[in-house]
Image (cartoon, rainbow, N blue to C red; front, side, top):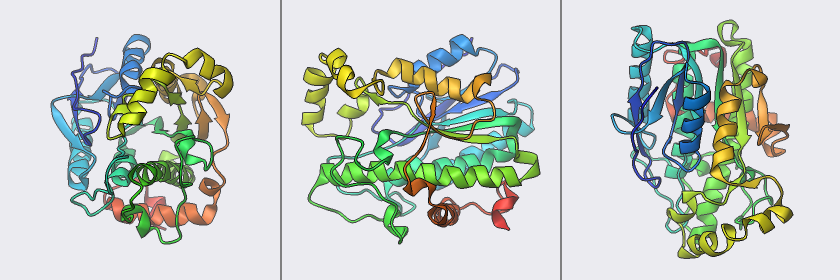
Length: 330
């Protein structure tokens, strides 16, 4: 049975991993496995899919998604370890990590990008694209979304998320007196960016003969009333709402808000099932819980998909020399 250790606090974008070598087919990478959703996801993975090797966020080899140099170095080490037979080929990458700050101004990483956007999107894109050549034939990429990506759907929204024409605004947003509102906007905007990028990724995968059976999916796992995110880089009022409203009134609130209001345990199970279950073999696109769904209209705009794809390659430092996805370079 695989083992894993505790990770750094959820507020940190620095993530470490424990390497679990079992010499069985199928490697699964789960970023931020110590999160509210990640812990039950790991438990379900170990219980239902013990045949898989797992690299989980924990405490030995560091993956700092706030640093592109660290992300590329981590990818290099995984590529090398798979090539040398230390790990089997990848079965899935579950891109679960994110960052938000609802109490401060935008933070720039050492790479010069907004920390929320880099951790949530750019570094995950870099990790996925670097590792594409080390997947099994039917490998899967799972991106974590939320209803925040669709303007008007989440009650925390004060400013609707949108992908601007000038996409440099995504990585260098302006400061604003409304820390909570703009902080949530930055988080919410990273979500449609990930979805928009996913559609281009699937298109290019299908054009690449050696990768055409691979698929990318995004999942809205629901609004988690027990998430530690409500107590991390947030106003005290949100933590109090969780303690005195969301948790005690959960059964009543669920009657009005529906099945997407839930706890972390079933959400973690759904994410692993989407990544590994034969039921979802070959599926592409967007899911709400485990039901196929439509993502926001903006994320389906083909011009924005292509523009964001091109900018993401630039931001993530991806070239035809460091990814197997040659179709993306013409």
